[in-house]
Image (cartoon, rainbow, N blue to C red; front, side):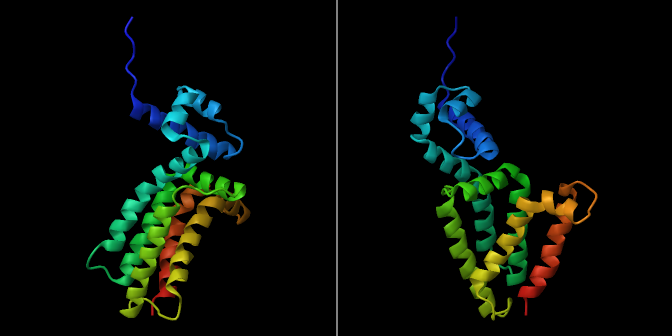
Length: 203
C-alpha cells in the first residue's frame, strides 16, 4: 500500500479555503478549528502547525484575499504619467472589481464588523490609505483634483461607495423597485460612481 506524500502548501491552502467559507457563513466566534479541519480534510493539529491560533488563521484568510488587491492598487498608485482624475478612476475600478470577484470577502467584512475583531489586512490597508492620500494630495497641488476637500475624504468617499454597494445591494435593489437580479446592476452602479463622484472631486 503506497503512503500518500504530505503536501504542506496544499494543506495550508485547503485550510484557508475551508476557513474562508465557514467564517463567511457563520462568523469568527461560531466556527471551531475542529470544524475547519473537518471541512479541509486535515487534522486539527495541522491547523495549529500552520497558523498557531484560530485568530491568526482568521487574519491570514483576510490577508490572502486582500494581497491580490493590494498589488493591483499599488501598481496604479505608482504608475507614471497618469493625471489625478485618470488615476482615481483606475483606483475606483480596481476596488470595485476586487469586491465583485470576492463575494466571500464582502461577507467576511460584515462578520468582522459585527464581531468587533481585527481583520488581518490592516497593515496592507493602512499602507494603501497612506500612499493613496499622498497621491491625491499631489494631484490637488497640481490642480487635477479640487483642493477644498481633505484628500483623506476623497479616498474614504469612494471606498465607502463601493463597499456599501456590495454589502447592501441585495436589499437595496428590490426595495428600490428594480426587477432584475442584483449583480446585473453592478456595471450600472460603477458607471454611476465614475460619472458623479469623479465630477464632484474635479475642479
